[in-house]
Image (cartoon, rainbow, N blue to C red; front, side):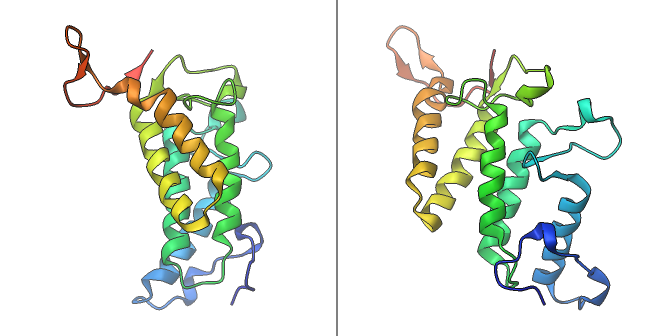
Length: 178
């Protein structure tokens, strides 16, 4: 068994000893396997896959949001003693690599590779906002709430199409902003 507060970086998941009906333990093992294969701990970022060189390995922001959401879900549901809270906070810090100015929307691709995406995606920013809002309800960290408010006020509201004559929302949401 893991020690309370053990970082996932220090654990060796062994899925061979897990009972077939222990879905929580299976999810923990899958999470640890994902981290071993795809995580860059020095950057708190993930690879898109394991087949490309360093320059092309950093995951797009969408994939990073999925990893953050998966970590939050494990934090909420895991019966293990893995320290998902510390891991989640590191992933949230790693997400800042996707911003070009430290505030506003997260860009579609990793900003440090020189391949900065010219696009801001409303769905990526919406997903991370919802996950962070749920996390805020758990951790009560005002910095998390400030990030959500910043994303909503500075970007997401702008994705709602408006009737240009009456300047009122007409429903729906744009997918991206260029």
